[in-house]
Image (cartoon, rainbow over all chains, first blue to last red; front, side):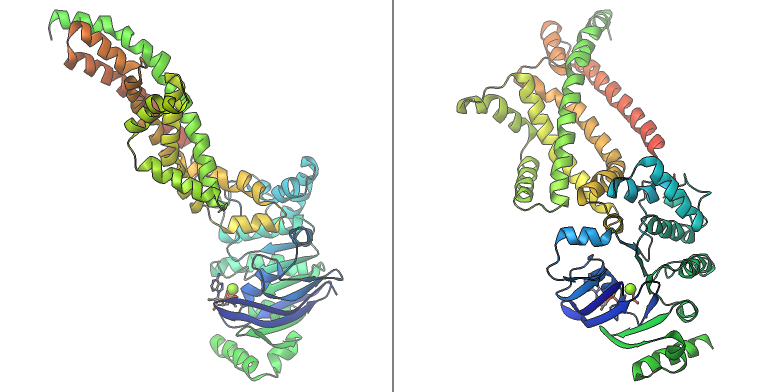
Length: 247
Length: 223
Ligand SMILES: Nc1ncnc2c1ncn2[C@@H]1O[C@H](COP(=O)(O)OP(=O)(O)OP(=O)(O)O)[C@@H](O)[C@H]1O
Ligand SMILES: [Mg+2]
């Protein structure tokens, strides 16, 4: 087991995470599904310390930390082994494609410039963006920006990548190129925790579904079971909703 | 304009321009440099929400913006000696102009910092950068770019503002024009001549600003 969170609580005025627990094994692609406002983004942000959970534990590489009291040093150490892909890319707007990827290596990790460049180019190649090294984010389409963001994540050689709806800010015709990159990563054995509304991706690529609603995990299942034969009432309604939306 | 006036103006040309180059421009340069440093520090303290220091910065801005520059100059040059702080005229002017314009520039800088999309800070954390690294390499460069036009405006207003240094005995362009006028009494033409030099300096800065803005453009030229 690579990552385990237990009993995560988080409130903004009202409680939005009401004791969430989940596990991710090495090589897993876990898809977090759920209606809008159910707390999926908040959960990912708590796991990567972009929000502070009031309660809960996180076990990473067999060390357990208390989310409410974890030290800055531990946060930095864990962050160096994880990566985050945001819904709206969050590329560094004053940096080129190449610099966006090398920044975390050279500045964050003190890596030698030539080595960083080598790694960055390889990562950009993996997402098909190695032909735009000197472009600025504002010169790229959303899909291209998101692929650069994925390369930025890959370059740091993370043990797990968190994705928060990586395709939902994209025009429909650009979604495919990003999902294809993610599918390739999954096939290469990358561990991923993915919040998504892309049901085909969840169904065909993920190894596990975690269904959330109103700040709770309602059902955890393999994709086949979840989509064909969900147990919980709310999961059934959710799956029904998807099917009827498609028809 | 009579032959006499023309001769006075020609004769005064270098006599006014020279203190312009030797006094007005250096005064502007050093005051602006000071103001720039102050503004970046004050803006960053507020942006990063540093307790106590932030209160001090707000007080500083409140005080400067609520009092006239002329009064500030008098306080620093004529007032401070009463409590044992004696400054030469030029350092007094540089300090006053620097702290004065610094307050206004700090507000523009703060606005520019706030305008940098926050998600980039989180992305910086996620790739292992520290807060200071993110500020220095990601946020500040973008904010400086955004603030560039308003900083240029501050520079222009500072060129003109240095004429106030005449009241604390500094012979910059305007005071020199006054001195010459005391001899010939041609206030209209002599002060217009001084005005023309200010106009010249400000126009040059505006040209440089335009060129600079083109050159910097936004990263990648789009936005
Ligand atoms: N910074 C915040 N301040 C206040 N409330 C917040 C904040 N972030 C999220 N919330 C609230 O927490 C709840 C969960 O939000 P969250 O963004 O985690 O949902 P989500 O499952 O990611 O939804 P979506 O599918 O729309 O992205 C929502 O009711 C939201 O309004
Ligand atoms: Mg969300």
